[in-house]
Image (cartoon, rainbow, N blue to C red; front, side, top):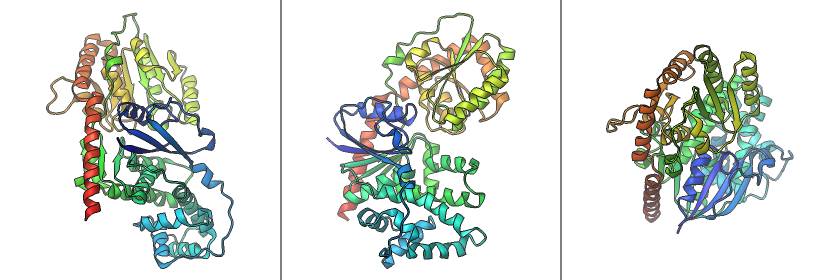
Length: 476
């Protein structure tokens, strides 16, 4: 039996869907192992408010709030001094280059002073002034100071929190969670497995480039921080998995050594989906988007397109099924529906997917970024065709690979392309026989390649290889 520490950022057990669905089914499918949850959330109000009933083999939960770090009182510590190694490590950390992470960990997890004291120390200000002269001569020093503080204080705060003890550390992302998992592995000298469902660094890059809360001069600086986090997690990990081959190549481009890379597909427990009957014909075509309200899901393109679809095909309904990640975006979507005066959009919130799919003819996913979405797998397992954007592994799921002869399980369209999306939805609305054929193909593909027992067996092999690699490195 292993004691496995899952390091989770903004997902399980606080929100449903996506990575959270995967984590919950993963833990429940490994009753022979114990799990510790080491979680990162943004607000203290979320502490203890779980969206899932935790499995019996979850034996500990350690919660950390990033927001708490930014509320720390600022004060000076005149006794704060750096050794030569510490100064160099902090300098490289500020530059988002290649800091000595062991020195950073030792300095900020064992130092009696709080991380907040770093930013008003003479040592740090001298480092920042030097960096400002080199890289930001035209930016205001005050702006640079607060930018660096916002970037690094949450990290140093997390490093200063107690580290759970485990036999193996496993993070389903890079970012803050990847850094914490790597430091836990380093501190307790244990193996680390890193699993990415999407490419975290690329997703943060897209979000930051679109953001309006970061000064343009500092956007690349913020992006470089997440690239630094990824490099550290990849290099510290003993095994790194992705969900499809293209994602593995992207990880390698970002710094993952190829010999650590493995592809492990997602898996579903198919029993509840196998029992879903075909929808009874009632003259309507019902389309479901199994999705959270979040900008990355691009529900606005879906709403615009559905308003056009209603002009062409009157007896069609859209069901947007899922929770709310971004309240502001949720409100914008509701206002858009009202502005377009489009009828027959139902928003039931979080529902039992296996039950709701009984009333659905096909599903749609309009994300601008994905990994290997469970929404597509669930739709295929239920025998419902899918219209999805060509992101992540969606095309591979829908069309299969070279050895797969089942045929298409839906239609792939370019992201944010209303006309192509409309054309695909129109085709499936009008052709019931095509819907049934694609639904059959999807169900066969999931049975063959995406059953959960296959996924669990593959991850157990990943653990075995990670432990063997760790033992080998420890003996050298």
